[in-house]
Image 1 (cartoon, rainbow, N blue to C red):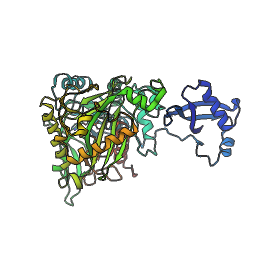
Image 2 (cartoon, protein in one colour):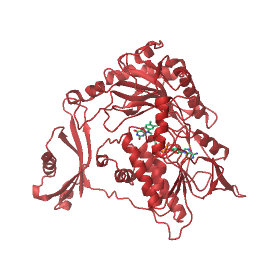
Image 3 (cartoon, rainbow, N blue to C red):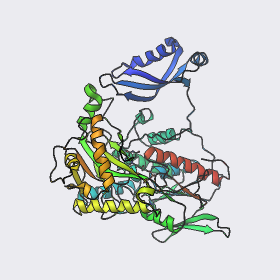
Amino acid sequence: MLRLTELKLPLDHSPEALRQVVLDRLGISDADLLDLQVFRRGHDARKKNAIHLIYTLDVALRDEATVLRRFQGDAHVNPTPDMRYRFVGHAPAGETRRPLVIGAGPCGLLAALVLAQSGFRPIILERGKAVRERTKDTWGLWRRAELNPESNVQFGEGGAGTFSDGKLYSQIKDPQHHGRKVMEEFVKAGAPEEILYLSKPHIGTFRLVQMVEHMREEIERLGGEYRFSSRVTDLLVDIAPDGTRQMRGVALADGSVIESDHVVLAIGHSARDTFEVLRQRGVYMEAKPFSVGFRIEHPQRMINECRFGPFAGNKLLGAADYKLVHHGSDGRSVYSFCMCPGGTVVAAASEPGRVVTNGMSQYQRAERNANAAIVVGIEPERDYPGDVLAGVALQRRLEEAAFLAGGSNYHAPAQTVGDFLAGRPSTSLGEVVPSYKPGVTPTDLAAFMPDFVVRAIREALPAFDRQIRGFARPDAVLTGVETRTSSPVRIRRGADGQSLNTRGLFPAGEGAGYAGGILSAGVDGIKMAEAVARSMLGLGGEE
Ligand code: FAD
């Protein structure tokens, strides 16, 4: 097959137009075109009055070689790459060793699935509960202001992305097409097929819950085993006389021990107690940059109109998103993050006495507001120097201050953009009704955020308003705080996937600093499953 990229068609084109555009582009007759599949569909909305769909198509032709020769040097006509997934190997019959996977987020799930598909029968240790029970606990915080520290938006089957917008795109380099494997497994587990070809696919919360259950069934069918409410509280590391460190197993909160010399550590960015265990056990880690700020909410209609003009509301375009960056005068960048069109702001705390915001949506993205984090990049050397876990300490300080400012009842502190820019506390809100549950408390966000964050966001909002008219409208609402943008540490690994100083430990996913988002965490899980398989099979090779 041949892959044709950058084919442009009007938004309202007929189904036949797709075939015609291929015939015209390649200069071939209808009889020469044997098959046509859409590989990717996106849109170009830079000109609001002339929004186009942009296609990548795979075509089967009667004489591909001749056409390819004719288009030699044309970057948009190429052989379709082989994207099939290839396992690094399979467990030998009678293999009794079992790898452990700590964490059942997207990283751990994909690692466990690929290990199970390779015959390794992994044991998955998850501190939280199975996803249905977890859903009830998560709603407990949103509806009754009751936080369960082991079962919440961050912890439990499905990981941090379960109650989310389920955006499935990423800008990672993926030469081995692992992202395709993640998407195909998601579709097998019940995700809509369109995620395979939309340029910016999303799943929404309800479907994610079902998918996670289906993936569990498949892992168990292949011999894997889940243990919920099984928090890993210690790592058992053998230290040889020459100082070489080797994983021997893990201890759980109930006092039991599980032995294994291959452990995938996919704990996410919120497992602060587990980061502390890693530090105590001497696992090599570094502090890493992350970002802090607030969530902002606007009417979704305003974003649609600004982005799509007369095409706002078009079904193919869906609810509009945005991605904004401002390089501030003091050298710091302010950017939008995890934008959720037609969604809600969610309470995302995992520790008592702390408030954290994030965003989610349902598949239809039909809620009234658009929300996104507006965050400022911060760095260890400049903003939280010294201790490797100083970033965690900073996150905790800000989350505690937000809890207090919200009224010490898990309500989030909130402020209108107008008041925030004018430097006065909010005492009431305007037309934009904040969606955060259990509720918000109008206040002064600047009172507890570091000055440089406040200054940077005050500078950025008017700049963003020049790109999206109304972005800095006085009644847009900011809620706080947004602190869990990415992991505050990197648990470094070598080219073989193993911790730099602890053999048999495979740090993976967002918590280890190797992913940011559902798709990239899944890709990293596959890579680490391969690294484990290579090690268990005694094969060389690198991730
Ligand atoms: P996690 O998903 O964090 O999973 C880690 C798992 O490890 C958790 O289940 C946790 O309970 C478990 N664990 C931790 N410590 C231990 C321990 N000691 N013992 C046993 N188990 C342990 N990303 C997107 O790409 N698109 C989105 O739309 C999106 N929206 C989001 C919305 C919200 C509300 C949140 C919170 C996040 C969102 N994200 C989104 C980010 C995304 O969820 C994460 O990037 C992704 O889940 C990271 O995957 P992970 O497997 O590395 O870690």
